[in-house]
Amino acid sequence: MASSSSSSSGTASPCGACRFLRRKCTHDCIFAPYFGSEQGPAKFAAVHKVFGASNVSKLLLQIPPHDRPEAVATIAYEAQARIQDPVYGCVAHIFTLQQQVAFLQAQLMEARAHLAQNAVTSHNNIENIFESAQIMMNMQENTKQKGVFFPSLS
Amino acid sequence: MASSSSSSSGTASPCGACRFLRRKCTHDCIFAPYFGSEQGPAKFAAVHKVFGASNVSKLLLQIPPHDRPEAVATIAYEAQARIQDPVYGCVAHIFTLQQQVAFLQAQLMEARAHLAQNAVTSHNNIENIFESAQIMMNMQENTKQKGVFFPSLS
Image (tube, rainbow over the protein chains, first blue to last red):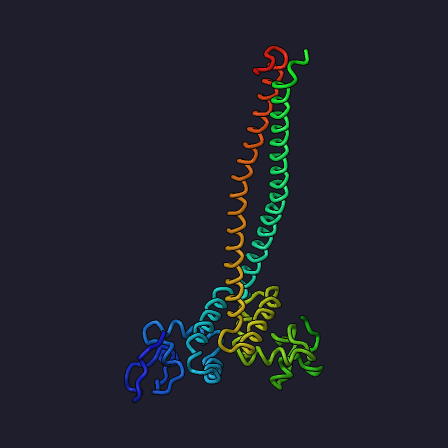
């Protein structure tokens, strides 16, 4: 994201912001590290149109330098989103994500309800297996007793 | 959201935006319907600080009137979020929602994996029940035959 386009003397190529604003780029240009001379003008155009160069400059100056790259990235993202969708801007993305969260929560609740139902069914099945096995063992015992000690009832 | 503070003559109380900007509020004020004279100035202050009155005015003029209330609401939301969090603004909300979506997707995958595993276990349990029942029926048949026709082997 950083650009080395600004110069200490202001004689080298200006940064993307200063190029867009057609102004001299000084060594302490607040925009220079984030708006390169090549891709920067287009990126800055959106930021300038939505927020205004002056507002963004003031905002960046109140943020510690190590946080500025993230601030510029989010400002550029918001600006681009507002140009693409003038009514909702990036809030459209928030609405979409909120809907996605609600949908996933509903799906998860449904899956968990099935799991809970399965746990009950599984418990009943195990009880059935034990019941069948018990009947089987009783019959085996009965058969053995009948065969050995109590022959045919007929 | 609408305000009736602006007047056709401009002599009634100005809207929240014009009050904040200390200017005359005309009958065609673009801000008047969305910034009331009471709550409006504070709301407009955030919008003005982040976007600038001129930029918001231009933006609203390019949007059909029926879409403007939503546009003002999302702009005010973005402005407030940027003031509260100068580095990330409302993009922080997007990050949080994205993380929530990823977490829910992982939870849902896990629940579905359990459901799939349960389906296999349930199928095996049912096979076991049928197997037990079959053994039981075979033994019943065997017992009957032994009892009636083939008395004790001992």
